[in-house]
Length: 385
Image 1: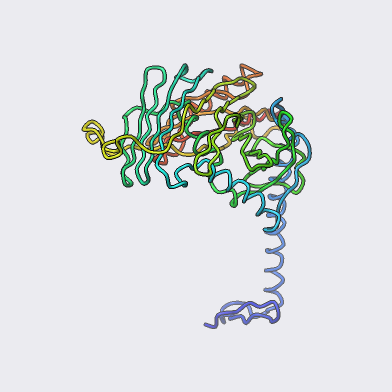
Image 2: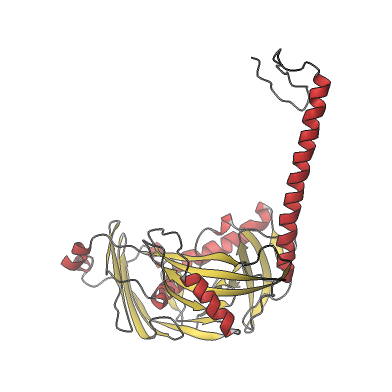
């Protein structure tokens, strides 16, 4: 049998068995009719899906928050030349908060006040030391004292889950811009943040050609003229604000003295960096696991924050009228994916917020081996009965 090689410039060769009809014109006509039918069905399906998606976006309640700096048009960056300055800006922020990149061992002491509706709230502390490749941190909050130690790639730690507020403290101090910005769709906007001119970079999985302002699915990072991160927002309505008054200078790194986390207009976490000093006291013994750690075996660590949607659509066949969205902030188990703690970011409608929390708590997320921090966009599809 001869294998046909298809080309835009030449008609492909075709093998026709003798038992098949030899009327090539009739066969071509039949194939053409089938192709047209399938193409029409595919286009119709795509049109229906696209129409529902666009219609849904149009009916989704717009995102509004008094702290949101990007309220006007944004610029979509598509070419490598357009994207690179924004990528460089966020890469600079990542390097600034990665204190270990200085090459100097350090000791950091932090105090914080946690308030809100999570399981563990109150006054807390965190101490962290690092002398690459070894590191250790311990925290104290509401009667629990989680800790982790890394020694040449081996992780040890306490058995209990890390409270949500402790995970937030570490994210704000060490991973305020998680992931790889160069792998995302990018938009930018100039904005004013409490009288300070900033450049805001918005990241998303995909973006339309024209997006006027921030949407529910955007991550947002606002940087001042000195390259310092002023605002990080992993989800709509959740803002981490950085204050560099009396900032700490450490081998070229500028560490904010105070950090505040606001969700849905309410302050849920206030972080104060008490000190950041060079060196680790008793370095020879500081990174030695205790017998209890060794008995527990390898421990897990915490992952960077993630954004994910959940669609609640009990009547998918009815005409769509409105989409109500509530962001739920949660942490999930490293080994089962079970939700360990959850709180609603948008609480203007308490009934809807409670429903959103129930949806998230009843969901098992894929386990990754890391304790996951999730911002779940629960989308309630309201349709005509």
